[in-house]
Amino acid sequence: MKTIQCIVIGLLLISFTAQGQTENSVEVFHGRAELMESQKILDLSYQNLEKVPIQALNPEIETLILDNNNIKELPSWMGDLKNLKVLSIRNNSLVELNYVIKNCENLEQLYLSGNRNLSDISNISTGQKLEIVDVVDTQINKLPSWVQMMDNLFYFKFTRKE
Image 1 (cartoon, rainbow, N blue to C red):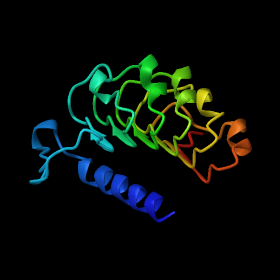
Image 2: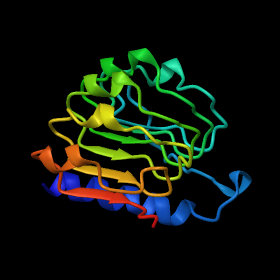
Image 3: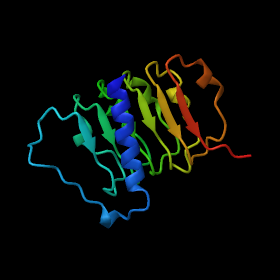
């Protein structure tokens, strides 16, 4: 549980610091350590991506951050990321989550806020390990009925529109 709390706090800090920044003002200091081949976190935010690059196809990845790009859909190989626990695709151009998200069997946290045209997330209804789903500022403006049937889900954040 401590690991989950640390990841949540880290992602919240990322979202708080990223709000209001322009693409040119974002800098990352990678430190002096060398990246290992079995990288656990991959951050590809602010890269003007239209597709998820093949470099993200690393079975060791546990956290994949694709925030603030122009991604319209997830690639079919995304389901091969069997160790993926956290997927953040905030502020992109998703319209729906395709079926491949079902194959991410260890996914615990899914951040989709800011995908203003996103209207269909029904493919996550079978996510047995999902604990956190954030769909603020999307077309999801009411609690889907299947959400109440998800055993592990304890946090579902959306924008209610009346």
